Length: 264
Image 1: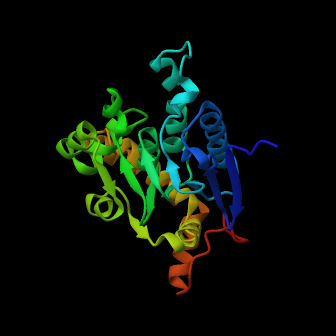
Image 2: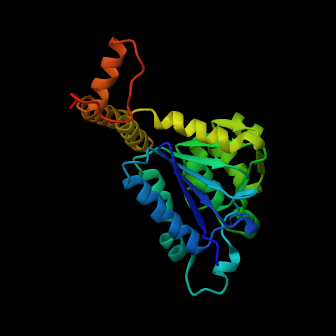
Image 3: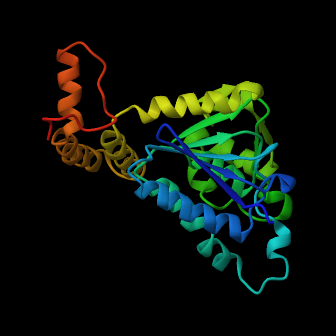
């Protein structure tokens, strides 16, 4: 029986999507990309899911495009990106759920873009990112030209892309490419624990926060202020806000997991 290209597990409100082509360091083919896009979309629509984790099986996170899968295909680069990678990146960034990129190993090419696309990036000590595109005379795609300069600045992003320099975990942390680095042997447990902490936070407020941050990346200050004011009203009208205020007054931990009786 053929192994599925994507493994799915849900525990404590955390939906973990594991790329499952370990013999190829999880290099992406059409099957993986389309299956992953559907899985992210389904997780976003599932009320039982509060956090989405993307990670890889084996030693790799995602080694980028499986070149053997596209060799000889009668499809332009533009058509391929618009049919596969771009819908996936849009699904990740457009999801109302927090998405964690749990980078367990090499993240190269479009895999680097996936590593950067999460709302939170958690790395194993052995993880490595490389914008490998220039080695085959292509440009970074799948969102890398948008994500990377916003994290490290134009000039460092250009250098990493032009020279295809490898970024190890310790340097990634210093550069702001990840939020946490964990030992390899405890990595998956640490990711689950972090994801469960995030799952305990107010889901509606985080969804609106993600919406505001995404918009602010390309808006003026005036537009950001206007959107904050509109979304703050939406947040304030939600039962989570009442629960947060009540918990503060009662000096207890807020329960954002489910709506309490009597709250509206």
